[in-house]
Image 1 (spheres, rainbow, N blue to C red):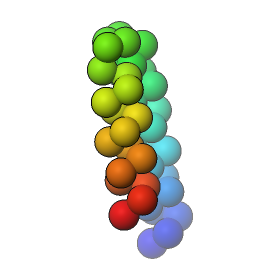
Image 2 (tube, rainbow, N blue to C red):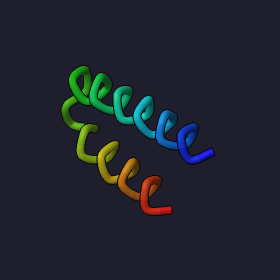
Image 3 (cartoon, helix red, strand yellow):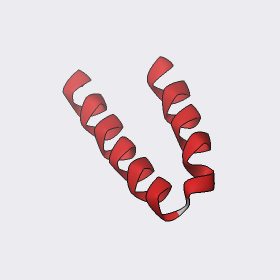
Image 4 (cartoon, rainbow, N blue to C red):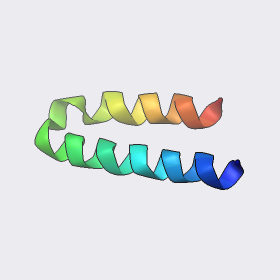
Length: 40
């Protein structure tokens, strides 16, 4: 289960990076959101 979670987080992170490159203004928001997710 942990592996699966990490894979999901990595996938989410990749999407955040890709989206951040397309929409730089949203990158910070995505980073905060992914941090919140990995804290839970």
